[in-house]
Length: 315
Image 1 (tube, rainbow, N blue to C red):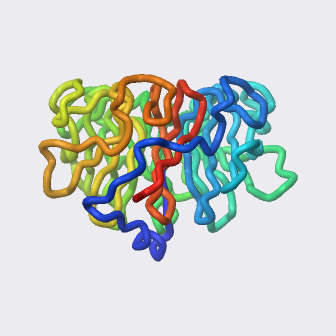
Image 2 (cartoon, rainbow, N blue to C red; image 1 turned 180 degrees about the vertical axis):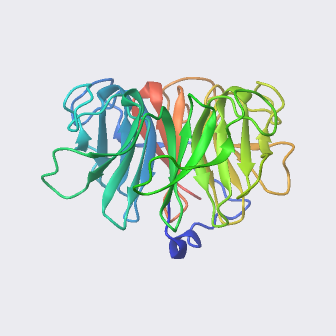
């Protein structure tokens, strides 16, 4: 769900012992559930640009919202927002979004319409174009060669596409729903590292899988010890991010927390923010979904049921 050009990846180097403020600051939404420009309706995936502009898949409002750094009052509708529907000017429950800097456009998982669409970021844009159709997509990622990776929840697989290509190449799963190392069960969010390894939040298996390029099986890099809230477990993982050291950050949506799993220790993770029961206080989440970092190492979380995006400053 997160994309950086190759020269930018090295700038997201988070120290192994980094800590974040435990109280988040609301930088988007937080004004109750609604469709005004200062509100969100169950935000899902999000993407943070170089200038700390945050782009959000505003699932319940069938739109993509953009919030510029420093403007916590109102966001801007940059795609959809014309009611739920399948027109090229509409979206239907979008779940993820990224910025393709090469074309200055948004690429969007338009889940309800079972398609991936692209919208130009140029002002005056009123409709998008279909990149991939007939795919029940949930998460997106892009590598530095501009290959697009899409999780297909209906087929329990992840496919890689050259832009303009319709069929793609299978890179993870594709062996039916299950808990085997060659299977996924409801794959959600994605991250692709510089080696083109694909990380998948394997939602219903309560684990995060890493599929090395060309591999027929994945590796469990977090969870996989059944559903639970112990440090060895995950509970319905969603947003994921991997830094240059190979440290994995993952949202445990059922635990309402963000966990860190270092490369050398796959047996258990640590809670970095949240984990204080479900709630709406600054140190709590309610069904968190998307996860990202800016180039300074600040952490952003789409706090779904609280209809807000929280930023946690790195200390």
